Image (tube, rainbow, N blue to C red; front, side, top):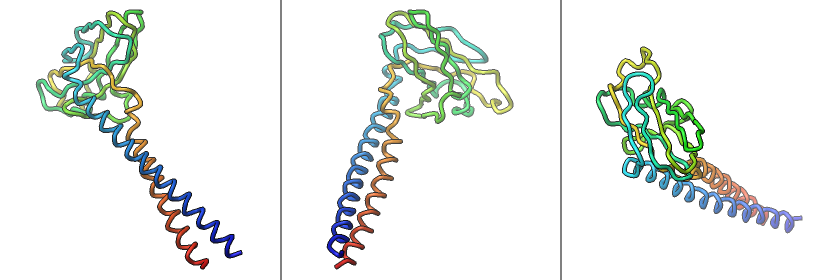
Length: 198
């Protein structure tokens, strides 16, 4: 009986160690993915295919670019006149993107659960477009009392979107960390019980 119990507890130690190792690997992978996402977003302003200015209420002049068949991201750049609540400015912004196939897609800051502020830019949303001429027309919603400090104007940019999978880096890292803790706990408990069966 003692031999069987020791074998069982030893197996738990091995399984816990494997889970902990997988957790470490997942955590490292998630950190790498998140770093790549941050770097890709941070360099967005330098990679922009077009840019425009947003001011006042409602849509401003549309901007056009020659698109590849891929995803693009709309970014609100924190430059311009005023010193308002920049996150709210991002959340009250919306853009209509029309591609060469005539498809119109609307992205809004309100659609994003978490606004990402990277190197002076908020990621408003991403859109897949067909190859050819594409246009983006952006604007702010009508202001409320909460928008009393909204900037007079801001610039926005359209940039090639980083791979969508990179956006899940934080979740991967968190899941990996939890797995590491669970595996480590299993190793400790299994080893303690294994020693107790001697």
